[in-house]
Image (tube, rainbow, N blue to C red; front, side, top):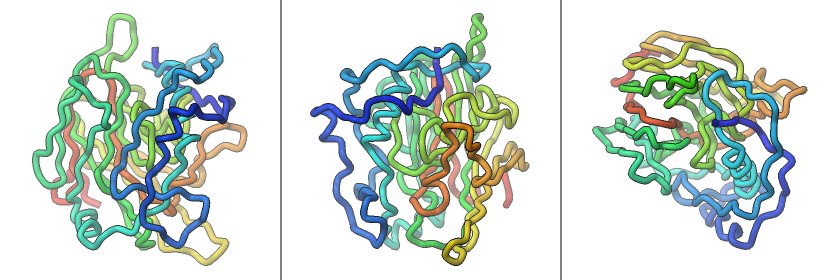
Length: 312
């Protein structure tokens, strides 16, 4: 089973083999001194060895009504995030800023992708991805941010995916395959779906729930994704406020060209919950488009405005 959980109480140390996975140096911006630099520009980090990690404690309840990730994957992800803090926003070249503005962005597969994944670029701002039924939890990230924090300008970011196929449910009642659409600040563990870990949000097509730094199950939000659906994810960033003010960032979801739900990012966290932290998503970090999947699925992403079914 795939068990979604946060393991905040794992040991804070790292093995000697994991030391080599720190983010490489990059351009230095005027920002907080303790924020690490991103590499130029690669959204991926290698997956550290987790064999020395203490196994996570058992839990007695699984909140998602469909499939759930296993304990080891959740444990590795929590350790990985502690070892790899969020990157500083990068000062992008004018060429890359034009690509971002034009939607000339592509999805990329993690370095660990194997024969279970087929990915090809079918045009400017379009990526086709197909996975086999043996594909474990995987995430695909945009090669450039869809939001560049260094610009500090009010903007709306958005992209769509067209669901071409998703395997049906098994006889056990578990979901054999699923697709999740989301946004996140890098870096991010390559074996976790968007919304499960820090600085990420996502809407999951297997259970129709939305997740923001929450691997326990997420609140009910929409219907499951079906073959032929075109679903989109976006965020609207208002102009910067005076010191001490708070931006009201809106997150919205669309289906087949029509709005299908939204929420205020700053109202996400419940003080009584362990998850729901929106740090990294408020406009102070670069944000990547993300599509997660497991099992046999097929979909296409569309980043160019003229390709969208939704008309903002």
